[in-house]
Structures are given as C-alpha cells and as structure tokens.
Length: 434
Ligand SMILES: C[S@@+](CC[C@H](N)C(=O)[O-])C[C@H]1O[C@@H](n2cnc3c(N)ncnc32)[C@H](O)[C@@H]1O
Image (cartoon, protein in one colour):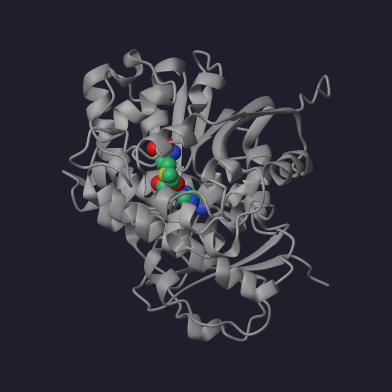
C-alpha cells in the first residue's frame, strides 16, 4: 500500500511555482510525498521555470499544465496553495484534504522589471530556491496533529490569517513611522517607542527609513547575543527592523533572513534592503514570503531564530515552535519577544478582531507557551516577563488599550492580563545532548 502523503501544489495557471514545487517534491521527497500540481486555470509551462529547474538538476520539461478539475477524484491529504490567487479561489476538495497557504512570489511578475534575461532568470532562481527550502521540510511542516475542532479549525485559522494579513498589508502601504494606535500628529514616533523598549541610538543608525514601523513589543536582538558569521532568522519580519539590526551584528560573513506572510510587508522590506546595502555595503539580508507555521527554510540551517511581537498572531503556535526547532542547527538558539497573558482574557476581548491584530487577543498564556517550548523539544528555556511595553502604552493613552480596558472586569487593567515576554531556549546539541 502506498502510504505516502498525497500533496497537491495549486497555483493560478500551473505554469511556474506549482510546477517547480511538484518537480522538487519528486526529486527530493518521492519516498514520503506523492506530489501533484494543478492550476485554477491552465497557462502552459513557463519556459524560464523549466530552464532554472534544469540548471538545478530537475527536469520538468515533460510536465503538463493541468486544471484542478482534472484531479478532483484524487484523495489528497494536503493541498498547498502556492500563490494568492489560488488561495482566494481554492475549490472545496472532497474528503479530508487540509489546505495550507504558502504564498511564493510570482517569478514572471518579479521579472517584469528585469533589465535583461539574466536578471529575469535571477528572479526565477530565487523563487526556485525558496520553493526548494519549503519542499525540503516536507512532510513535517505539513503534518501537524489535528486541532480539536477539526475542519472548522482550519477555516478559523485561515480567517485569522486573512484579518492579520489585511491589517498589516494596509500598515505596510500606509508608510507611517508612528505607532499604530496613538500617534500621527502626536509625539510618539516608532523610534521613540523602540527606544523605550531598549533599542539604542546606534541601532537606528543606517536603518532604512520605514524599516521600523512601530510594531515591536520587545527587543530580541538584545537578548540573542548574536555573533559575526551567524545565520539569523526573524519570524514575521515586517519592514525588516530586527533583520537589519541583526545583519549588522552578524556582519558580511553572516546572514539575516526575514519571513513574513504579508506580501506588502515583504515588498517593503526588500525595497528597504536596497537602501540598507547602499548605506552599509552589506548584502547579507534576504526577505522571504511565507507563513511562520510552514517556514520556507531548510532543516537545521539557522543559528538563531528571533521574533518580535508575531507569535501571538499565529493561529497555531505549537506548529510555530515545532518549526523553530526544525530549522535550528543543533545547539542553535531562539530569542523570541512577544506579548503573553498572565490570565485568560474575557470573551469580549478574545473575540475582538482589533484586539487580535493589535497583538493582544491571540496571545498565549505564559504557562501554555512554556509547554509549547517543551513539547517542541527545546531545552534551557528561560522566560522573562516585563511591563515595559504595557506601561508605555498605558502612559500614551493608547486607543486600543482604552477600548480593551472597557471590556475588562471592574477594577482591573490591561497590565493585569498582558505582559511582554522574552523567551530564550536552545536546540540540544547532537554531540553533548544539551
Ligand atoms: C506586529 S508586526 C511585527 C513586525 C516586526 N517583527 C517588527 O517588530 O517590526 C507582525 C508581523 O508579522 C507578520 N505575521 C503575522 N502572522 C504571521 C504568520 N502566521 N506568518 C508569517 N508572518 C506573520 C505580519 O504580516 C506582520 O508583518
């Protein structure tokens, strides 16, 4: 019996990204994955996709562009939508197929601005390599245990991601350098807010304008003790704030990678990377579009995972911690800053979309976070709570804080429920076991 995972990679025209994913899966994972690809339309094979895959030793020239309707009888375990259009118009699949969205950039679109064919091929190669990293991590990154509420959970997760993506997409396009709820016209700028979180003056130097969008609630690079030559991965990198700070610390011999699921954020961060290179001469940063629950990053390839105010936005935090453990090298470490709960929030706050995208309603209880880190197999975990962030918001007449306060039991305030938390942990070294 063939017990391989049946995976369908779905895209708009089944011409490029889904074909590359199918090609990589056949090449790298044929023992555990039975791969298919299709489009919600058919556009024929993209010759540049065929070319860059051939360069990497994978022949997809015999593939055919297929419409998903041809495959509706296949009992897929997982459907991976690899572009936004497929994600929006993904049909219903019979059976128990889980639908996972892992949006990769569209190479033909990226290549529109290319000066010549070589530059266009560079765009295709970048996406090819990002897809390879994602496929290399299969099937672990797709086979999470079912949530108690089954299919509804998947839909709920998607609804959460959509709200988060919409809110942060707008935020990236707005281009304000002030904090979300209080300012624009007032005195609290993103930089002064970050200074209150412990960022130093020198860290703002050579930072591209707009990299700090005032969305942080901690300072992970301060606790990560980064060293020259290390590879750092920032989960939910936004405009690239911590990625650029980390890039200077790890230097030209290191790498600083950001992953974010909001296309406008990734676009903004990539534009920022160009001015960062101009100012510092460093080209050691890389921004990838993807979900932190399915990181487009190879196993055991990262020295340090950092994140700043993002895990609370994930509908599946257990999976994020498993992904952190997967991508870390043995002995590698995590330094995660986030908001967490000291006690459960009342339902009226938990149900508020504004409180969700404002990083509060989705926060985990500190004890649950402890359990997730343990269950992911990380060791030496240290949890440090601080009221710096909540104090600062309370001082600044934050609108969201005021709205949340009204929904709390009389006599309580947001800081009785919410705290900022630094979590450090490491992946056991395979040699020493600690
Ligand atoms: C509060 S902002 C923090 C941005 C950045 N870390 C900073 O400190 O400036 C949250 C970011 O995480 C991204 N994000 C939220 N949930 C995500 C997920 N499940 N996968 C990938 N990115 C996510 C959002 O698109 C947004 O850019």
